[in-house]
Image (cartoon, rainbow, N blue to C red; front, side, top):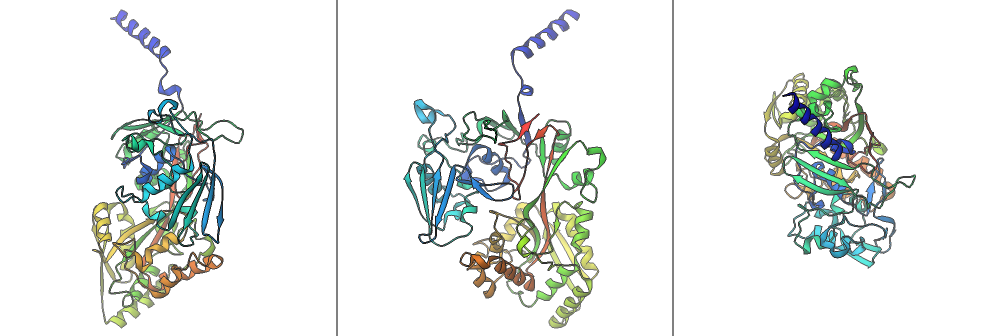
Length: 523
């Protein structure tokens, strides 16, 4: 037995010396609990798909950590107001990931025609990309030559460049489809990492792109990491245990029970977890309650105003969210985008709430009020807090729990009179949030789940792109209109949280919570 053990021990030493293990490489490991449905940028509609796509692909432009639009494959651009036309000048040193589809050379440079192809592909109805809307205002894509691309718009748009930062706008090679190679299975892009393998429901592995076109400030080639490994553990508590055991380098948006475990009421890490690094950032997501106002826009506005002033949002955030987030006091547009027109409209004032409530009861000749709100289980604690706040006004609010998928379908079909909802920005422009109240966007044609309709709102919304010099004033007017009718009860503005092992350096974040691993390193 001793001889067998010694032989086995020596064999293990020999194998470890001959074959490098994953521990010898700088592999960044994170978990995607909701899994990944596609690696095709045409279907990057949620963070679970956006994050890996951001490692595999590049676009013309990108957002930095301050949400400023910066060059990516386009090194510069200019806008011709007379022609309503953008001209982009491309870097001529950007190559696709190596693949047999490119023939004997195994790769080739990105040219402007690739963008024409990629953008038209997004518009192809047969593909049915959820990102097709970002190019609906485009009149023409034109490749002037290999490094000059022109995009002509139908109508002026202050938000078009912002839309081009979305992963839908990534460039892909036409050869991957001519050869019948679906990007969903064998993604070929230009990004800092290259597809290696994807074991569905188990792990996705990316490796370093040694031919990546970017360098750091010192001239060193990026990225620093050797690869990325993404697991698909479906349970958030199990994910946290893997992180604590150093099997994961980062977790994103820990669930409420974990937040309560590791943070105090001021949002600071407890002493037991002081070895964890935390990145907090405003996240362009607004959580709210919505009313179906089809037949009640005027008749029930005082009830909705009463509810808005009956909720102590600051108290709610402190004790239910450990101040991970911001009380939604200004309106629908969240922290990170509302600085120029912030106004504390939705303040806590029980006397004002009672005043509005009495006005509603008198006007509608009612003596009592009963509401039924539909939510999913994840937000039950917040809804129960609101239930207790409204009880102080003798408003009886019942809570109906439904699965998230059923809730989404019900909102889209106008099934519910009162419901929980949220809106994550598609692109970093306040205009995106006012889409929720445009009459032309009433569901099922758009995200106006409250069926809100007001002529003054529509008239200002429709000229947002025409009066750039007064745009902040117009945003303020739109927020005031929404408050006056109160089709929504804004609850809080989200905050993204990333927990990192202390050997991870160079990580940053922005308000759209995009994962950028270009300059991340593992010590």
